[in-house]
View 1: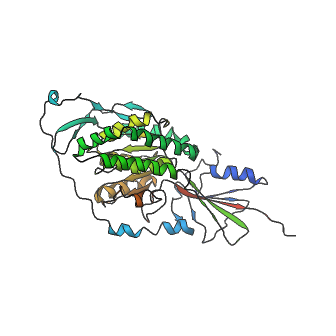
View 2: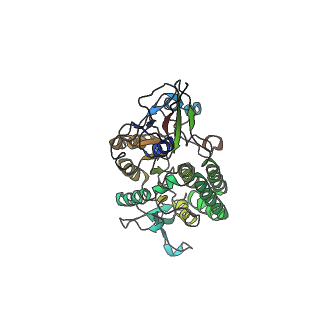
View 3: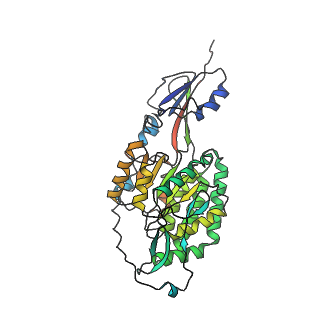
Length: 387
């Protein structure tokens, strides 16, 4: 298998065997978009066709190809995200804060980690008062996080039911601490955080349910064959969360990625990251394998560019301005990374009808296709004797 996959291309492959069970066991392990069994170059417009790696990740034909050219009608009504107001810190005496002065660490490889730069960044509340500090992540921190995520690729082969149980555990443990997280949100944003915490818990429960229920399909080409379209993880995902909903925004993107078996490098809200630095305490008590979730704090745009250029990141989700989205898409060209960006549009991640379904699980964007799971096609060609 190592020899078969030792190529930068992955358009199609063929397996020849008298043992169909053996062929079906080998087929999912081959990193090619299409794998034929006991046949080759069998095409039909009803069956999607596409590749892996430098063969491209697009799909042509079938419902998979159709999805690449269509997008939901509700996206046409999205409006631009309002630009955040610039905040400047008010001079304060740390001794007057009334709480312990503490700098939140990052979370890499299952443990808390100090930033490589040694620098911190301030976290301000809605009034401009200093309420905490987090590490200023840089290229080295991203590299460490990606290395940890790639070391956790066994998550891609973890049974879907097990992934579901871990997501349920995450939701339960977050729910136990809902008041604490609501207070933290209010301290950062000035808004009541109870509803956002409740929505984050519900989102984790929703995708725990999806983990073992979003699967592939059997196509019926007009030949004596069967085409099986399999849903499988892409690999390491980079996620840059929005600023407007610090907890829900991160969880809404994190949950579908984990449900489909993808290790994640998460960059939380740049303006209100303390909710997600608190969240890794929930991660540590929820049986999440080390390296599956990695959290790097810092400037979102700078870290997004590093993730987009990193060859070890297979896909990147980015929520930010139109200019920054264009930068991310351009930076990803060098390694043909799949990207999904918000393009400066205001996606309401609190909308359960839109974002607790399969929107983030399936391919939806014609020119920025990025999904928590990608279709791979397996054509099982079985010889039949009609004599």
